[in-house]
Amino acid sequence: MYDPISQRFLNNYNIGMRYGNYYEYKIVFEIAKKTEAYLKLTETDEGWQQFEKLLQSLSDQKEFERIVLRPHLSRDGTYDDKQPNLNDPEINAPYRHYDYPNSKDRSKIEMGRLSFINSLKPYLVVSIHLNPAGPKQTGGMAAVLAPGYRTFNQMRQITLGKAKPSSYRSMAWSCCWLKNQPGWSDYEVAMADTWVYFHGYWTNKTNTAPWLEKNRGFRYNMITWRYSDQPGWQQIAANHPPGQYSLKYEDFKPEGKFWEREKSKPELWRREAAVPKTHIKYGGDNHFASDELLRFVQYGLRQLSPDMQKPGAMGGIVPPFVSTYGLPTYINAISAYLEIAHLNVERDRRMVLTKQDEIAKSLAVGVYSLFSGLELKKGYKGPYRPVAKPLDFKKYESYKEGNYFKIVSD
Image (tube, rainbow, N blue to C red; front, side, top):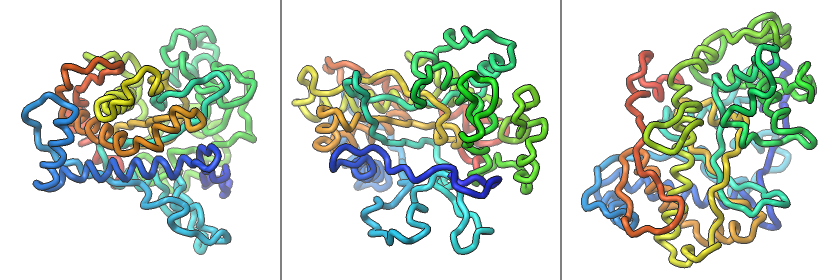
Protein backbone atom coordinates (compact mmCIF):
# COMPACT_ATOMS: atom_id res chain seq x y z
CA MET A 1 0.00 0.00 0.00
CA TYR A 2 1.21 3.48 -0.90
CA ASP A 3 1.17 6.16 1.80
CA PRO A 4 0.54 9.67 0.38
CA ILE A 5 2.09 11.31 3.48
CA SER A 6 5.48 9.57 3.49
CA GLN A 7 5.22 9.06 -0.29
CA ARG A 8 6.42 5.49 -0.07
CA PHE A 9 5.01 1.99 -0.14
CA LEU A 10 4.42 0.65 3.36
CA ASN A 11 4.81 -3.03 2.54
CA ASN A 12 6.16 -5.40 -0.07
CA TYR A 13 4.10 -7.36 -2.56
CA ASN A 14 2.43 -10.34 -0.90
CA ILE A 15 2.24 -13.32 -3.24
CA GLY A 16 -0.28 -15.10 -1.02
CA MET A 17 -0.37 -18.66 0.29
CA ARG A 18 1.98 -21.20 -1.27
CA TYR A 19 2.48 -24.89 -0.56
CA GLY A 20 5.11 -26.61 -2.68
CA ASN A 21 4.20 -25.89 -6.29
CA TYR A 22 0.63 -24.93 -5.43
CA TYR A 23 -0.19 -21.22 -5.33
CA GLU A 24 -3.25 -19.55 -3.89
CA TYR A 25 -3.45 -16.91 -6.62
CA LYS A 26 -3.66 -19.54 -9.37
CA ILE A 27 -6.17 -21.82 -7.68
CA VAL A 28 -8.63 -19.17 -6.54
CA PHE A 29 -8.54 -17.41 -9.91
CA GLU A 30 -9.63 -20.63 -11.63
CA ILE A 31 -12.50 -21.02 -9.17
CA ALA A 32 -13.46 -17.37 -9.61
CA LYS A 33 -13.48 -17.65 -13.42
CA LYS A 34 -15.74 -20.69 -13.27
CA THR A 35 -18.07 -18.99 -10.79
CA GLU A 36 -18.26 -15.91 -13.01
CA ALA A 37 -19.14 -18.07 -16.02
CA TYR A 38 -22.06 -19.68 -14.18
CA LEU A 39 -23.37 -16.34 -12.92
CA LYS A 40 -23.15 -14.82 -16.40
CA LEU A 41 -25.63 -17.45 -17.60
CA THR A 42 -28.34 -15.35 -15.95
CA GLU A 43 -27.76 -12.53 -18.45
CA THR A 44 -29.44 -14.23 -21.44
CA ASP A 45 -32.60 -16.29 -21.97
CA GLU A 46 -30.62 -19.24 -23.27
CA GLY A 47 -28.16 -19.01 -20.41
CA TRP A 48 -30.95 -18.78 -17.85
CA GLN A 49 -32.27 -22.16 -18.99
CA GLN A 50 -28.87 -23.66 -18.17
CA PHE A 51 -28.72 -21.82 -14.85
CA GLU A 52 -32.17 -23.16 -13.93
CA LYS A 53 -30.84 -26.69 -14.39
CA LEU A 54 -28.04 -25.85 -11.98
CA LEU A 55 -30.57 -24.52 -9.46
CA GLN A 56 -32.67 -27.67 -9.87
CA SER A 57 -29.66 -29.81 -8.99
CA LEU A 58 -29.55 -28.19 -5.55
CA SER A 59 -33.19 -27.30 -4.94
CA ASP A 60 -36.67 -28.85 -4.74
CA GLN A 61 -38.29 -25.73 -6.18
CA LYS A 62 -40.37 -26.10 -9.34
CA GLU A 63 -40.04 -22.50 -10.49
CA PHE A 64 -37.31 -19.93 -9.89
CA GLU A 65 -37.43 -16.17 -9.87
CA ARG A 66 -35.62 -14.86 -12.93
CA ILE A 67 -32.94 -12.42 -11.91
CA VAL A 68 -29.94 -11.07 -13.81
CA LEU A 69 -26.60 -11.20 -12.02
CA ARG A 70 -23.81 -9.19 -13.63
CA PRO A 71 -20.51 -10.52 -12.29
CA HIS A 72 -17.10 -8.88 -12.67
CA LEU A 73 -13.64 -10.11 -11.73
CA SER A 74 -11.34 -7.66 -9.98
CA ARG A 75 -8.41 -8.93 -12.06
CA ASP A 76 -8.32 -10.37 -15.57
CA GLY A 77 -5.56 -12.90 -15.11
CA THR A 78 -2.75 -14.14 -12.93
CA TYR A 79 0.82 -12.98 -12.56
CA ASP A 80 1.97 -15.81 -14.85
CA ASP A 81 -0.57 -15.11 -17.60
CA LYS A 82 0.94 -11.69 -18.23
CA GLN A 83 4.54 -12.97 -18.52
CA PRO A 84 5.80 -9.79 -16.85
CA ASN A 85 9.14 -8.10 -17.28
CA LEU A 86 10.72 -8.52 -13.86
CA ASN A 87 12.37 -5.09 -14.17
CA ASP A 88 9.10 -3.30 -14.90
CA PRO A 89 8.35 -0.87 -12.01
CA GLU A 90 4.64 -1.53 -12.57
CA ILE A 91 4.95 -5.31 -12.32
CA ASN A 92 2.69 -5.45 -9.24
CA ALA A 93 0.27 -2.74 -10.33
CA PRO A 94 -2.69 -5.01 -11.29
CA TYR A 95 -2.69 -6.56 -7.82
CA ARG A 96 -2.37 -3.50 -5.57
CA HIS A 97 -5.30 -3.02 -3.21
CA TYR A 98 -4.80 0.71 -2.69
CA ASP A 99 -4.22 3.64 -5.06
CA TYR A 100 -0.64 4.37 -6.11
CA PRO A 101 1.32 6.91 -8.19
CA ASN A 102 2.08 6.30 -11.83
CA SER A 103 5.77 5.38 -12.09
CA LYS A 104 6.31 7.80 -15.01
CA ASP A 105 4.29 10.69 -13.61
CA ARG A 106 4.04 10.52 -9.83
CA SER A 107 1.50 13.34 -9.77
CA LYS A 108 -0.94 10.97 -11.45
CA ILE A 109 -2.66 8.54 -9.07
CA GLU A 110 -3.81 5.17 -10.43
CA MET A 111 -6.73 3.26 -8.97
CA GLY A 112 -6.02 0.13 -6.96
CA ARG A 113 -8.38 -2.82 -6.81
CA LEU A 114 -10.49 -1.40 -3.97
CA SER A 115 -11.15 1.75 -5.98
CA PHE A 116 -11.92 -0.36 -9.05
CA ILE A 117 -14.40 -2.47 -7.08
CA ASN A 118 -16.11 0.64 -5.74
CA SER A 119 -16.29 2.12 -9.24
CA LEU A 120 -18.51 -0.81 -10.24
CA LYS A 121 -20.92 0.08 -7.39
CA PRO A 122 -21.67 -3.58 -6.62
CA TYR A 123 -24.23 -4.98 -4.21
CA LEU A 124 -22.13 -8.03 -3.28
CA VAL A 125 -18.38 -8.69 -3.37
CA VAL A 126 -17.20 -12.30 -3.06
CA SER A 127 -13.53 -12.80 -2.17
CA ILE A 128 -12.03 -16.29 -2.42
CA HIS A 129 -8.85 -17.10 -0.53
CA LEU A 130 -6.77 -19.99 0.80
CA ASN A 131 -5.14 -19.97 4.21
CA PRO A 132 -2.19 -21.70 5.92
CA ALA A 133 -3.02 -24.03 8.80
CA GLY A 134 -1.04 -23.85 12.01
CA PRO A 135 0.47 -26.91 13.75
CA LYS A 136 -2.73 -27.79 15.65
CA GLN A 137 -5.21 -26.88 12.92
CA THR A 138 -6.92 -29.55 10.84
CA GLY A 139 -8.15 -27.35 8.01
CA GLY A 140 -11.63 -26.31 7.00
CA MET A 141 -13.11 -23.02 5.85
CA ALA A 142 -13.89 -19.72 7.54
CA ALA A 143 -15.43 -16.29 7.08
CA VAL A 144 -13.14 -13.25 7.20
CA LEU A 145 -14.68 -10.31 9.06
CA ALA A 146 -13.84 -6.72 9.95
CA PRO A 147 -15.74 -5.16 12.88
CA GLY A 148 -17.27 -1.71 12.61
CA TYR A 149 -17.15 1.55 14.52
CA ARG A 150 -19.26 0.33 17.43
CA THR A 151 -16.77 -2.37 18.36
CA PHE A 152 -13.62 -0.33 17.79
CA ASN A 153 -15.04 2.62 19.72
CA GLN A 154 -15.75 0.33 22.68
CA MET A 155 -12.14 -0.79 22.55
CA ARG A 156 -10.94 2.80 22.26
CA GLN A 157 -12.60 3.43 25.61
CA ILE A 158 -10.24 0.85 27.14
CA THR A 159 -7.23 2.85 25.93
CA LEU A 160 -8.77 6.05 27.34
CA GLY A 161 -9.33 4.41 30.73
CA LYS A 162 -13.11 4.67 30.40
CA ALA A 163 -13.63 0.90 30.21
CA LYS A 164 -11.89 -2.07 31.79
CA PRO A 165 -9.71 -4.39 29.69
CA SER A 166 -11.95 -7.25 30.82
CA SER A 167 -14.78 -5.70 28.78
CA TYR A 168 -13.05 -7.05 25.67
CA ARG A 169 -13.95 -10.59 26.71
CA SER A 170 -17.64 -9.71 26.79
CA MET A 171 -17.56 -8.97 23.06
CA ALA A 172 -18.63 -11.71 20.65
CA TRP A 173 -15.63 -10.82 18.49
CA SER A 174 -13.14 -11.85 21.19
CA CYS A 175 -13.58 -15.51 20.24
CA CYS A 176 -11.85 -15.08 16.95
CA TRP A 177 -9.39 -12.18 16.77
CA LEU A 178 -6.52 -13.11 14.50
CA LYS A 179 -3.19 -13.24 16.34
CA ASN A 180 -0.92 -11.94 13.58
CA GLN A 181 1.98 -10.74 15.73
CA PRO A 182 4.23 -13.43 17.30
CA GLY A 183 4.16 -13.42 21.09
CA TRP A 184 1.07 -11.20 21.35
CA SER A 185 -2.26 -12.25 22.81
CA ASP A 186 -5.49 -11.82 20.88
CA TYR A 187 -6.37 -8.91 23.19
CA GLU A 188 -3.07 -7.14 22.48
CA VAL A 189 -3.53 -7.57 18.73
CA ALA A 190 -7.15 -6.41 18.95
CA MET A 191 -6.05 -3.22 20.70
CA ALA A 192 -3.36 -2.66 18.05
CA ASP A 193 -5.96 -3.19 15.31
CA THR A 194 -8.17 -0.62 17.02
CA TRP A 195 -5.60 2.09 16.49
CA VAL A 196 -4.78 0.95 12.97
CA TYR A 197 -8.48 1.47 12.32
CA PHE A 198 -8.53 4.93 13.90
CA HIS A 199 -5.21 6.49 12.90
CA GLY A 200 -3.17 4.01 10.90
CA TYR A 201 -0.53 2.99 13.44
CA TRP A 202 -0.29 -0.07 15.62
CA THR A 203 0.04 0.45 19.35
CA ASN A 204 2.93 -0.99 21.27
CA LYS A 205 2.27 -4.23 23.13
CA THR A 206 1.21 -2.45 26.32
CA ASN A 207 -1.24 -0.22 24.42
CA THR A 208 0.34 2.97 25.74
CA ALA A 209 1.79 4.61 22.60
CA PRO A 210 1.81 4.33 18.80
CA TRP A 211 4.29 1.91 17.29
CA LEU A 212 5.68 4.30 14.70
CA GLU A 213 7.51 1.60 12.76
CA LYS A 214 4.16 -0.12 12.16
CA ASN A 215 2.54 2.49 9.93
CA ARG A 216 -0.47 1.29 7.92
CA GLY A 217 -1.57 4.74 6.79
CA PHE A 218 -4.92 6.52 6.70
CA ARG A 219 -6.33 3.81 4.49
CA TYR A 220 -9.65 5.51 3.83
CA ASN A 221 -7.65 8.25 2.07
CA MET A 222 -5.71 5.73 0.00
CA ILE A 223 -8.64 4.83 -2.27
CA THR A 224 -10.87 6.74 -4.69
CA TRP A 225 -14.37 7.02 -3.28
CA ARG A 226 -16.97 9.32 -1.74
CA TYR A 227 -15.48 9.32 1.76
CA SER A 228 -11.93 10.60 1.20
CA ASP A 229 -10.89 13.82 2.93
CA GLN A 230 -10.48 17.02 0.96
CA PRO A 231 -7.36 17.59 -1.19
CA GLY A 232 -4.47 18.77 0.94
CA TRP A 233 -5.31 16.50 3.86
CA GLN A 234 -1.79 15.05 3.69
CA GLN A 235 -0.18 18.31 4.79
CA ILE A 236 -2.50 18.56 7.78
CA ALA A 237 -2.21 14.89 8.72
CA ALA A 238 1.60 14.97 8.61
CA ASN A 239 1.56 17.22 11.69
CA HIS A 240 -0.97 15.04 13.57
CA PRO A 241 -3.03 17.88 15.10
CA PRO A 242 -5.95 17.16 17.46
CA GLY A 243 -8.80 15.57 15.52
CA GLN A 244 -8.96 12.65 13.09
CA TYR A 245 -5.19 12.70 12.43
CA SER A 246 -3.98 12.85 16.04
CA LEU A 247 -1.47 10.32 17.34
CA LYS A 248 -2.34 11.23 20.93
CA TYR A 249 -5.17 8.92 21.86
CA GLU A 250 -6.84 11.47 24.13
CA ASP A 251 -6.82 14.06 21.30
CA PHE A 252 -8.21 11.77 18.61
CA LYS A 253 -11.69 12.64 17.30
CA PRO A 254 -13.59 10.70 14.63
CA GLU A 255 -14.39 13.64 12.35
CA GLY A 256 -15.03 13.95 8.62
CA LYS A 257 -16.98 12.14 5.91
CA PHE A 258 -15.41 8.76 6.52
CA TRP A 259 -16.17 8.77 10.23
CA GLU A 260 -19.74 9.87 9.60
CA ARG A 261 -20.02 6.87 7.29
CA GLU A 262 -18.56 4.57 9.91
CA LYS A 263 -21.16 5.68 12.46
CA SER A 264 -24.05 5.27 9.99
CA LYS A 265 -26.77 2.63 10.06
CA PRO A 266 -25.65 0.89 6.83
CA GLU A 267 -22.24 0.17 8.35
CA LEU A 268 -23.92 -1.15 11.48
CA TRP A 269 -26.02 -3.45 9.30
CA ARG A 270 -23.05 -4.53 7.18
CA ARG A 271 -20.45 -5.20 9.88
CA GLU A 272 -21.92 -5.28 13.36
CA ALA A 273 -25.59 -6.15 13.84
CA ALA A 274 -27.28 -9.48 14.40
CA VAL A 275 -29.18 -10.71 11.33
CA PRO A 276 -32.88 -11.33 12.12
CA LYS A 277 -34.23 -14.87 11.78
CA THR A 278 -30.76 -16.37 11.37
CA HIS A 279 -28.06 -17.77 13.65
CA ILE A 280 -25.83 -14.71 13.03
CA LYS A 281 -25.58 -12.73 16.28
CA TYR A 282 -22.76 -10.34 15.31
CA GLY A 283 -20.84 -9.28 12.22
CA GLY A 284 -23.86 -8.07 10.27
CA ASP A 285 -24.77 -8.94 6.71
CA ASN A 286 -21.08 -9.49 5.90
CA HIS A 287 -21.01 -12.35 8.39
CA PHE A 288 -24.27 -13.80 7.11
CA ALA A 289 -23.25 -13.64 3.43
CA SER A 290 -19.82 -15.15 4.14
CA ASP A 291 -21.17 -17.94 6.32
CA GLU A 292 -24.00 -18.65 3.90
CA LEU A 293 -21.71 -19.08 0.89
CA LEU A 294 -19.46 -21.39 2.90
CA ARG A 295 -22.55 -23.41 3.81
CA PHE A 296 -23.50 -23.59 0.14
CA VAL A 297 -20.04 -24.96 -0.65
CA GLN A 298 -20.53 -27.61 2.05
CA TYR A 299 -24.07 -28.36 0.88
CA GLY A 300 -23.33 -28.22 -2.85
CA LEU A 301 -20.23 -30.41 -2.79
CA ARG A 302 -22.10 -33.12 -0.92
CA GLN A 303 -24.95 -32.97 -3.45
CA LEU A 304 -22.83 -32.78 -6.60
CA SER A 305 -20.02 -35.15 -5.55
CA PRO A 306 -21.20 -38.22 -3.62
CA ASP A 307 -17.63 -38.96 -2.52
CA MET A 308 -17.73 -35.76 -0.45
CA GLN A 309 -20.52 -37.25 1.68
CA LYS A 310 -18.09 -39.66 3.32
CA PRO A 311 -17.16 -38.84 6.93
CA GLY A 312 -14.03 -36.71 7.02
CA ALA A 313 -14.03 -36.04 3.27
CA MET A 314 -14.28 -32.32 3.83
CA GLY A 315 -13.18 -29.94 6.55
CA GLY A 316 -15.86 -28.09 8.47
CA ILE A 317 -16.59 -24.40 8.92
CA VAL A 318 -14.33 -23.03 11.64
CA PRO A 319 -14.71 -19.76 13.61
CA PRO A 320 -14.20 -16.53 11.63
CA PHE A 321 -10.92 -14.71 11.23
CA VAL A 322 -11.33 -11.20 12.66
CA SER A 323 -9.12 -8.16 12.10
CA THR A 324 -9.27 -4.65 10.67
CA TYR A 325 -9.21 -6.02 7.13
CA GLY A 326 -9.29 -3.49 4.32
CA LEU A 327 -11.70 -4.94 1.79
CA PRO A 328 -14.68 -5.59 4.10
CA THR A 329 -14.21 -2.10 5.55
CA TYR A 330 -13.60 0.10 2.50
CA ILE A 331 -16.45 -0.97 0.24
CA ASN A 332 -20.18 -0.25 0.59
CA ALA A 333 -21.19 -3.60 -0.88
CA ILE A 334 -21.92 -6.64 1.24
CA SER A 335 -18.61 -8.48 1.64
CA ALA A 336 -18.58 -12.28 1.47
CA TYR A 337 -14.92 -12.88 2.26
CA LEU A 338 -14.14 -16.59 2.19
CA GLU A 339 -11.17 -18.66 3.26
CA ILE A 340 -12.39 -21.83 1.56
CA ALA A 341 -9.47 -24.10 2.43
CA HIS A 342 -6.11 -24.46 4.15
CA LEU A 343 -3.69 -25.17 1.32
CA ASN A 344 -1.15 -27.01 3.48
CA VAL A 345 -3.79 -29.52 4.66
CA GLU A 346 -3.96 -32.47 2.25
CA ARG A 347 -7.74 -32.93 2.46
CA ASP A 348 -8.41 -29.25 1.80
CA ARG A 349 -5.83 -29.08 -0.97
CA ARG A 350 -7.34 -32.06 -2.77
CA MET A 351 -10.76 -30.39 -2.61
CA VAL A 352 -9.69 -27.09 -4.21
CA LEU A 353 -7.62 -28.87 -6.87
CA THR A 354 -10.15 -31.53 -7.93
CA LYS A 355 -13.54 -29.97 -7.12
CA GLN A 356 -13.20 -26.52 -8.64
CA ASP A 357 -16.26 -26.85 -10.88
CA GLU A 358 -18.41 -28.13 -8.02
CA ILE A 359 -17.21 -25.31 -5.76
CA ALA A 360 -18.01 -22.76 -8.49
CA LYS A 361 -21.49 -24.19 -9.03
CA SER A 362 -22.16 -24.13 -5.29
CA LEU A 363 -20.99 -20.53 -4.98
CA ALA A 364 -23.10 -19.46 -7.97
CA VAL A 365 -26.23 -21.02 -6.48
CA GLY A 366 -25.37 -19.46 -3.11
CA VAL A 367 -25.07 -16.02 -4.69
CA TYR A 368 -28.45 -16.50 -6.35
CA SER A 369 -29.93 -17.46 -2.97
CA LEU A 370 -28.52 -14.31 -1.34
CA PHE A 371 -30.56 -12.27 -3.83
CA SER A 372 -33.68 -14.42 -4.20
CA GLY A 373 -33.73 -17.16 -1.57
CA LEU A 374 -33.96 -20.86 -2.34
CA GLU A 375 -35.85 -23.95 -1.25
CA LEU A 376 -33.22 -26.59 -0.52
CA LYS A 377 -33.55 -30.30 -1.07
CA LYS A 378 -35.53 -31.76 1.80
CA GLY A 379 -33.55 -34.98 1.78
CA TYR A 380 -30.24 -33.35 2.62
CA LYS A 381 -28.84 -35.00 5.76
CA GLY A 382 -25.43 -33.40 5.88
CA PRO A 383 -24.11 -30.67 8.18
CA TYR A 384 -24.01 -26.91 7.61
CA ARG A 385 -27.38 -26.62 5.91
CA PRO A 386 -27.67 -23.11 4.41
CA VAL A 387 -30.36 -20.77 5.69
CA ALA A 388 -31.19 -20.09 2.01
CA LYS A 389 -32.67 -16.71 2.93
CA PRO A 390 -32.05 -13.59 0.82
CA LEU A 391 -30.21 -10.58 2.14
CA ASP A 392 -32.29 -7.51 2.90
CA PHE A 393 -30.90 -5.27 0.18
CA LYS A 394 -33.91 -2.95 0.31
CA LYS A 395 -32.81 -1.25 3.52
CA TYR A 396 -29.59 -0.20 1.78
CA GLU A 397 -31.40 0.87 -1.38
CA SER A 398 -33.75 3.11 0.61
CA TYR A 399 -31.03 4.75 2.74
CA LYS A 400 -31.74 8.44 3.35
CA GLU A 401 -28.67 9.60 1.39
CA GLY A 402 -29.51 7.38 -1.59
CA ASN A 403 -28.88 3.79 -2.62
CA TYR A 404 -25.95 2.91 -0.36
CA PHE A 405 -24.34 0.68 -2.97
CA LYS A 406 -24.53 3.36 -5.65
CA ILE A 407 -23.32 6.38 -3.67
CA VAL A 408 -19.93 4.85 -2.86
CA SER A 409 -18.20 6.72 -5.68
CA ASP A 410 -18.91 9.52 -8.14
